[in-house]
Length: 457
Ligand code: GLU
Ligand code: MG
Image (cartoon, rainbow, N blue to C red; front, side):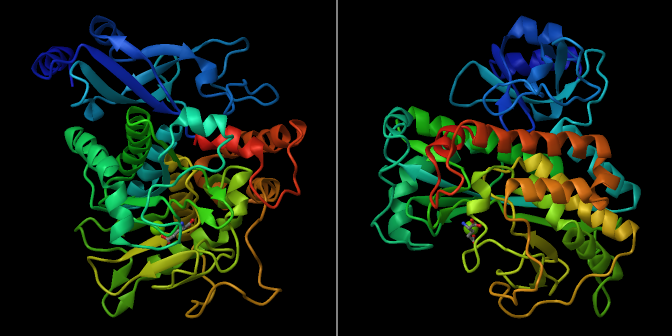
C-alpha cells in the first residue's frame, strides 16, 4: 500500500492514531501509539525502538549473556516495519488503527530472529518445495470475575471463575452462557477488525473458554492469535475481569494451544493424500515432526510453568506419538478425506509464541520431507501409560533446551543462530526461577510463576 492510498484509507476510516504491534520471542506484544503524521512519516521502514524490544526477557531485562548479529554493541535501535496488509481500524475506539509489524534493522534489513519473519521464511521454504500451508490454532484461556488488580492483590489465587458451577464440565451450555457477555464483546471487536472466527465453547476447566479460527496462511493464523490474546486481555480490563493464558493455572487446569496444519499441492488438493490413502510426503512429514519433537518441546512449552501441564492421562501428550483421530497422541492426524486432511499437533501450551510454535512444527515436517525420514508405527490405542521404556518428551525447561541444542532437524530449517539464541533464552528463564528463590519442588504453581506468567502470557 503506497502513501496516498494509506492517507485515503486513514481518512475514510477516521484513523488518527495507529498502534503498532510486534511479537517478541516470549510472545509479548510491543509497539507504540503513533500520531497519524508520525505514522505516515515513518513509512515504509516504520518507527524505531531500542533493540532490546527483541532482546529482553519477560520482565524487560536485556539479554546480557548471549548475543545475535542484529544487536548493537551498545543498546541501539531496530525498526518496527508495518505490514500494510494488516492495517485495520479498531472499530470500538473511534480514532484508532492497528498494524502488525516485523522487527527489522534500521536499514530495513530482515532479522531472522523476529518470530514473524522466521515463520514467513519457513513458509517460503515450504513453497520452494512446491507446497502451500494452511494453519489454525485453538485458543484456550481462563476467565475470572475478578479484576486484574484484585487478582494481583490475591496473588492470583482464590479467584472466582466465570461459569455455572464449581464442577469441571466441558461443552456445557450453562457455563458458556455465563461467559457469553464477555465473549459477545470479544466477538464484536474481532468482527470489527475483520478477524474470521469459527466457534467458541466452554472448555474443560472451571472458567475455561476455547475460541477457534478457520484455516489460514500461517502468518495470518499466528497474527490472529497474537491480536486475539491482546483483544481478549483488553475486554477483560474494560469489564474489570481477568483472563489468563498461562499453561498450568492450577493443579488440573491447563491451557493448550493446539495447532492444526495441512499442506496443499499447486492444484489445491491435499499433499497428505494420494489415490488410495496417505501420501509418501505425509509419512516423511510426520516423521520429521515426531523426530524433532523433543527439541521442539522447548519452543512449544516455553516456560517453567508449561511442564506442569505435561502429565499422563490429562489432555496433553507426553511422548512423540501419532494416530488417526487419536487425541491422546501428540499428533492427531485426520486423513479420511481431502477436504479434512490435516495434522493436529497437541503439545503447545497457552503460553507458546504462536509464530515460533508454528515455525517449529512446520520446520520439523519440512526437515522430515527433505531427509525422507520414516515415522514410528501409528498408535491406535491410548498414548498415555505407555511402557516405561517408551521414550517420553522432555519434562522440564532445561531438558527441553538440551534436546533442542542437540537437534539438527529444526536447526536445518530455522537456522542454528536462531536455535542457539532461543536455547539461551530458556536457560535464562530457568536461571531466573532458581535465582529468585522459587521452590523447584513445589507440586503447585509457585508465586513466582503466577507473578511472571498470569498477566503476561
Ligand atoms: N486444555 C487441554 C490442554 O491443556 C486441552 C483440552 C482439549 O481440547 O483436548 O492441552
Ligand atoms: Mg480444547
